[in-house]
Length: 152
Image: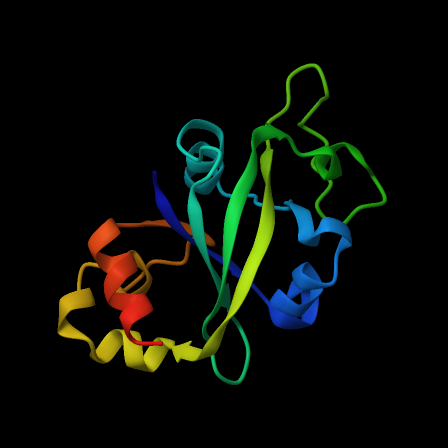
């Protein structure tokens, strides 16, 4: 099993939005970074566990848990000229962009803030806290996963 952290802005799509979806499941679309796309396409597998991270908000942090319930498949938003994630270079017969489906597991009992994560020396290698890392999807080691859950 792999572990991940996926970022979303709560004003766009937050953990409450996922929790309120039918079957508490939703596709994770709009990723337009090749490295993140490759992780979704090549590495994310059914049953992988995911931290839901609220970004670009007053108090960024890990707010909940999700699970990968459908492995990578073409991101249809890239084909829709009316969608904000439209990419005219991507075609259904040769898609550039990939999405996965996630399922809500639970809210954390509290927001584990970015500030807290940065202060934890044992998490110095966590991609999220490394300088210059702007990816919206990043791997988390099993050890990091357990350390973060213990902070709850």
